[in-house]
Amino acid sequence: MKQTTNYKLRFLWSILIAFTIYITSCSDSDNSIPEPTPTPPTPVSLKIEADKSIIKANGNDTVKFIVKADDIEVSTSVKIFLQNDSTVLSKMDFSTKEAGAYTFYATYDGVKSNEINIEATDIPILLSVDKETIKANNKDIATFTVTADGEDVSANAVITMIESPDFIISEASFFTQNAGSYTFYATYDDNKSNEISIDASEVVLLLSADKSSIKADNSDKVSFTVTIDGENVTADSELYLWDDTKLDALSFLTDEAGSYTFYAVYDGEKTNEISINATYVNLVFQMQHCVIQIASTICPNCPKLTNEIEKYTGNKSIYNVVALHPYGRICNSALAGALASTAIQFAEIAGISSPPAGVIDLHHPFYLYPTTTQSRMKDQFNLSTMARERIAETGIAIQSNVNNGNIDFTVKVKSVNTNEYRFFAFVVEDKIIHSQRSYDENNNSILIKDYEHNNVGTYMLEGEDPLTGVNLGEIQSGKEITRTYSINTSNFNTKREVNLDNCRIVAYTLREIGGKYYIDNATNCPVNGTVQYLYKK
Image (cartoon, rainbow, N blue to C red; front, side):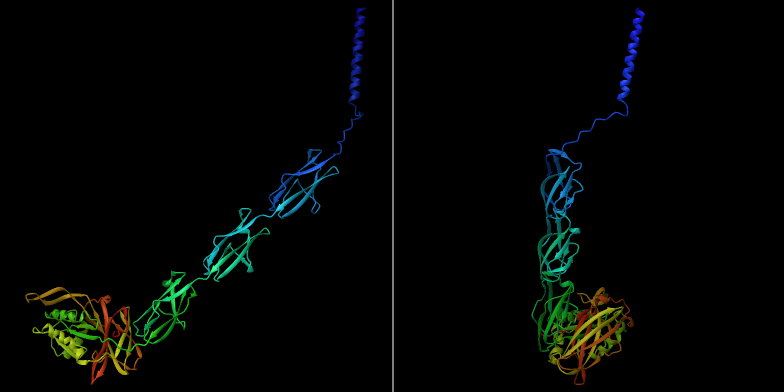
């Protein structure tokens, strides 16, 4: 009985398990019908919002939109329309480079939202300049700066001159040579800036002179100054006469009376014109004399004569001394040189056979004897001016240069009267250190080894007689003639080394009086230098 009962229980469990498996297999069958997905309800309200209502029309400033359906933010299946042209935005934001008012709305599930307005404002384009006034000299530069909303965009902006719209400013800078007022504006991304004005003031380039009139004596000189806005630029300027003749310096002198007009040029710009009046001057030339001294290095009396000559001529520019050293028994030093025979020629004129002696203006000898007093010596030097009692008829001007051992000089001679004149020139050397016989305080003859010799005749015009000179021909009254001469120093056997830096030209004119040639006037000039006419004051 008990065994039967267990069997029954086992059978019931089997049925129960089988039924459970059947039920499970039925629930997993492909023929089962799924439950339907619920459809969301159509929203009652749709609202579009923006994070800002104003943006800058710079293409970068962006407004972001938010769309809410029944206060729940949605983004899928949402369309945002720009009402201005009915276009649909590709995303939930908007930016533009065009200023203006823009209206937007959204749609979602067939429902249209409210409208929202966005204003795109112009970018503030600011044009500024580092200076509002420049000089109209093509050099003074004004530099512009263009900013867009505070950012420097000068390199990409276009700056336009209102007075000349076709004139585009390059490199954001402006300069001009024309005085006036100029107005500019800038554009950037089609946006226009403020206007700004620049005044270009006229550059004051001024020529001035230290005097308005001069004497037409080839000595009185006017000097000019060139300034630009007060700055002295004379050194970099050039001076011209009214006929466009360029002058060598910014100064002028003349011996022709009249009115002269000048202008200067600086950096290609022409100044104002200035007129200078040169007044007529009666030609009264300062009389200058030529003193030929016959000297010797072995003559103990010669230094005494030299001292006397310096005493009566050294402080007077009217005496021009040429010391000639004969060669022979009385002198065989290096100072005799190539002009020894000329020294003898003048010694004969003086009527002496040995120094110390000399001759003034070719015809007035002077001597130094042991018995010669200072009063007598003074009388000898006054003799030439007292005996002739006349004024010089000629004036002499010289321009000289040394070129490769040649002394090249241009001589101008002007005459008071119409007459025939002649010309001659020596070259003398100063500061020669050479021995010299002299007397000491006890009147004993001594040798001075380092004696300084001056006015030593060294060269002269070749092939010409110093007693008659070179024929200049007739010179008309008040007129001027010009001659050019050259002395080749290598043609002279000086027996010493000559320092041309210590050399001067001693020149004189001659005219015939009573069948003899007299020195009419004389002058001296450095071999690298200039001397003008000397007028009597």
